[in-house]
Image 1 (cartoon, rainbow, N blue to C red):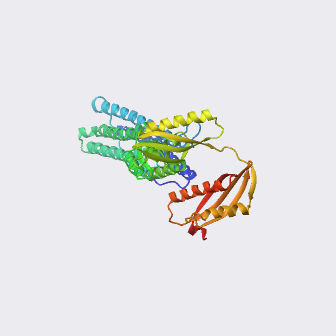
Image 2: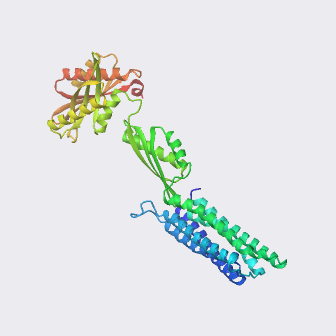
Image 3: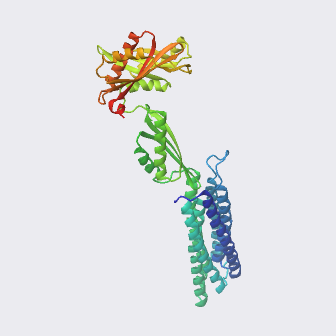
Length: 473
């Protein structure tokens, strides 16, 4: 199914081909009815009745196409595409009614009330014209149906392709009747109702095919093989641990896919969204323009370490832990961590929350024997203070301390702030590019401690480490 250039173009083309089919059905139906009444042929009458049903169905198709192209609204969140499927289903019922009448009349003529068929050239011409028109409109309908995935138009195209064979059978039956009259072969007079029975059989075949397609669509059956292809595509998406569920339904010319995929529970919300977008793209490679809903399910991956499992418990409670350290004390694991909590909480509320988190961690990570949590207040207000100011004497003292650490190559952008009556110091320190991050952290922590020891007035020290190559730019 190729994608339409614009929705307006799709709507216009679908309606135009449906309307042309209605006009063609009017011409064919009138011609066949006249030919059937004049000739008395059951084969021609059955074709005429079939064309009446076709006319009703083409009108229904035209109306269903108009309705199905409406956008989704508050009462029809999945759009109006099911109207096409419903139209095709009703068409199936009408075809079966036609088949029942033809069968009844054929049995009556074969065994109870024979009818003499009046042959004429213009009856044959009407049937040949019908074949030509059906061939033209079936091709036009099939082209648009495949282009836009319209089941209603596809159903009409299938009808008219089958009508060609039905008319051919009727012509064959009339030919046998003519031969029977010419050579006085009485049993060939029965060829007309027999041809009508063959037409009825073809109608049953068409109805069965339509019934299967429309019932599958109305009952939300998944197209054969589509689910397996989607599973294969989604399984290759980076970040997807497992595909838990895939549900597919069709409404008119559009598919809707609903998936639940397992993702690592330590993914950030932004990363989870990126995975969902990649899953959507994978589904649309199988079903272009499908409406896809992805439900991410957090799950422990096989690559989690003990630290990941601890952080996962905090993340599950929408909290953040940092500075997590684990010590093996005589074969027993002891955890120390810093937990950030809302600064507006009371100590009792904060302590109760920490107790809950610690209990959950020990339940999920059973190898941990004990946990000690340092509670930190997570700022929720913007503090006012004085802009950064220079303090040459304080900066000189800090540089003297930095000289005690040979790994620190440089100290620059030294700044002093006064906030809430407290003194804050920040600076940038340059380190070698290949110095391990753990060592950088240890040195930065040691510097902060030494700064506060030397300058008791300092409330907080923030050190920003930089690689040597970055500092040379």
